[in-house]
Length: 217
Ligand code: MD3
Ligand code: FE
Image 1 (cartoon, rainbow, N blue to C red):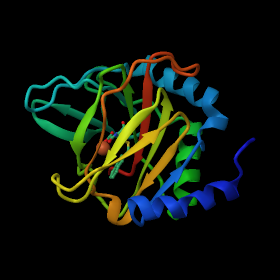
Image 2 (image 1 turned 45 degrees about the vertical axis):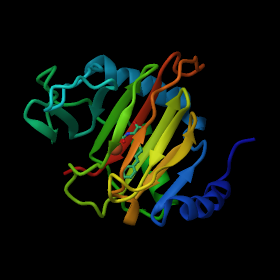
Image 3 (image 1 turned 30 degrees about the horizontal axis):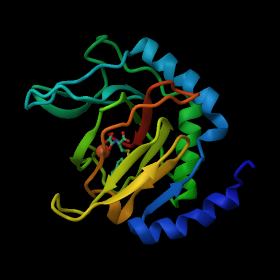
């Protein structure tokens, strides 16, 4: 059955109890548009290809990344930042597809952030074994702005902690189509993704993709 607007609203309350105020888990919100989203994602990647960035510490990230929108997240020997140009192509990042913007704004509105206008969409591609170790997202200008995260393809275990790296983490299984909104007191919480398990998904093959929408500038 197709989820209704009301279903998504109803699901926010139990999640807020689990992850804290300011958050919302909109299970399956992206599913209705999965074909359009994947088509747009591959069009972005045709223009700005996925690449494994190397951190200032010299580590090659296991997650491959690209971006769309006015700003894109990058890391290199000089640090972590948002940039208006793709360092691989020398040109601007691809425009944010309308289906991305519409989904991000719908999710933000359902979560109580009706004025959210993202200017950056980081696209993460996970292959089996790829992971994101516990970190905070601190490269954006205004932490009052939420982050909207869209998961596609293979399932993952999301780790969600507190404001200190040493705080205890909870494990949240995330599947294709799930949309998470992180704002308010949760915005600066540590989080990560456990190593991806091997598998195959009809929409993405052997990968998991994650879109994170931010107002970075
Ligand atoms: C909780 N991406 O790109 S998205 C990232 O699935 C990132 O690729 C993960 O963490 C992924 O930085 C997780 C969920 C997420 C994003 C931002 C958050 C959770 C967050 C900011 C604060 C708290
Ligand atoms: Fe993050």
